[in-house]
Image 1 (tube, rainbow, N blue to C red):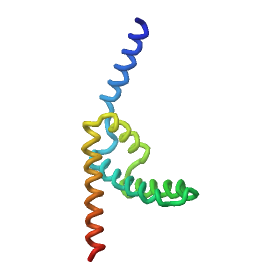
Image 2 (image 1 turned 60 degrees about the horizontal axis):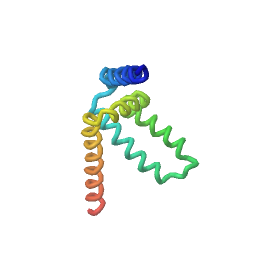
Image 3 (image 1 turned 45 degrees about the vertical axis):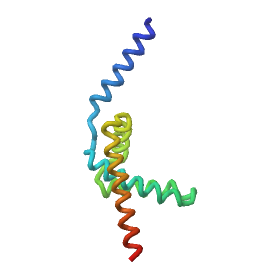
Image 4 (image 1 turned 45 degrees about the horizontal axis):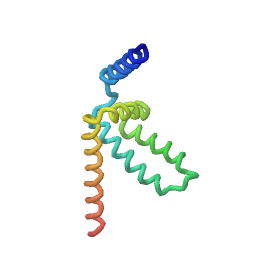
Amino acid sequence: MKKIIVLLFIFCACSSKQDKYVLNYSEEKIKDVLIDVYVISEILDDVDIDVKDSLRSKYIGEIEAIHNIDFLAFERDLEWLQLNPAIYNPIHSAAKDSISSYEKQYKAKKRK
C-alpha cells in the first residue's frame, strides 16, 4: 500500500511539473528552428563520420546565431513539447509542411 501511495505521489509531482513548464521560445520560433534542424540532419547524413561531430557543433552555433536562441533551452522546450503531443504535433506538422514546400519550390526551379 505504501508503494502505491509513493508511486501516486511521484506521478502527481511529475505531471504538475509538466503543467507548470513555460516554454523558452514561442511555438513559431520552435517551428522555424526545427526546420533548420531537420535540414541540417539531412545534410549530416551524407557526411563522413570523422567530421560529423565538428560540423554538427558548427551548425548548432549557426542555428543559435541565426535564430538568436540557446540550443540547450530549445532542446528542453522540444523535450517538453514531445511529452505533450497536442501542442507538439501541430508544430512538427507545420515544420514538415514547410520543408515539403521548400523542396517543391527547389525542384520547380531546378526544372526551369
